[in-house]
Length: 311
Image (cartoon, rainbow, N blue to C red; front, top):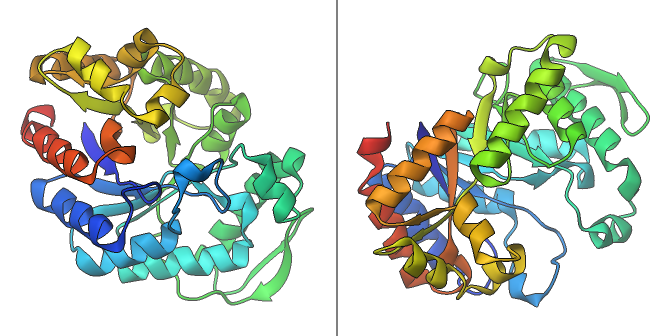
């Protein structure tokens, strides 16, 4: 099982120096990847400041040599695909082929309204834009005539280092996102802990044959929260010091069920449940990311001490 980390590019602890330190530390201690996420507008002021994901990754690419760099997720329907194709390909060049393109449709209608993009069409737009990206990345001259994007005989450069293009991971909770992952994706970002992974695996298998895809060829990604302490109760209490955790989880039992919480042994047992459910990649989020840079740094290093046991 490969393990990466989501580093906060939003919220009160975000700064150039903090992002740099977390990125360099993640590479130093052996994580497979670093992810950032995306909003153009923010749901409320607790998300501010919110650094642009691709500019953040470009900065990280210049500081690192090995660790993979990804978006989880990038709001593709809010960007012109010609521009997105160039930015992603440039980032893959700058990182020497380390990019993972995680995309999704988002949920914040205010972003769509402000950018004059129809919210109720965001899934269809995403599907068409994914086709456009692949054409631009793999053809010397590309054309598409669709409902939402039209261009003819264009030369988009640079091309990505990774061939035919960087891996595309599809996020989202809907069945439409499941189908999108099978049609256009190389990976599926799941939600909801081990039970969520199991549910998504069943949904993928339901649609895979009709779409001509082998589910085993998809990278199945889980995105658990991490809270480390001497026992599960203390770890859960620590997590609920975060306003983001209190906002996301209606009760502590749900959080404990879906997350990596407690001691080394507790975490190891829960990792096995993720693996048994079908996950082969974890993208960790540390519960301290809205509370304390120092605590996030410490927890990232503490979890990394266990990485050799999870291979």
